[in-house]
Image 1: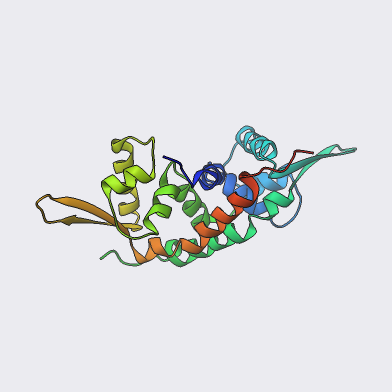
Image 2: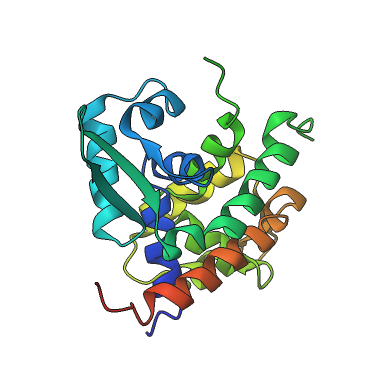
Length: 107
Length: 107
């Protein structure tokens, strides 16, 4: 059977990886230093954060720039492909606010 | 630090679980029998499919109905909370079509 959902499936597995969706949302505010992203995603090790950013870079969602120093800094920003996730992730955020902030009583 | 993204984070981890996003999308067409869902998500074991459906039921996204037989059948449908994911998942699907079906050349 053909799976017409295949690109969608890839998309959902990509943004659904632990911390990835939160990182993309943090980058919607503009380019961020590694340390800023670490602060935006509390409780994540630098190693895991760096791994997720590399994945996003490999998928063409994030662009990494090394800024000449001193001190040398690394910043991350969304590519056009990454920025284009805004409406999907904003809708998901709105849904989460509606249903997960004040969960309705279970019937 | 407060994490204002917390409900969003929960949402993205919920729908990002393997097969979950695809299952929800399949249920957007209306109630489905277990066998129909299995056909919509090829390559998934019945056990894993059943586990994912139980998770979605526990989160209030899917409602399970046992239909009196014979033969006895089980059908699944989205709750109001589940159906309300339509715009977020449709946006994500559109994004996936734009960017993952015909990936742009990497520069």
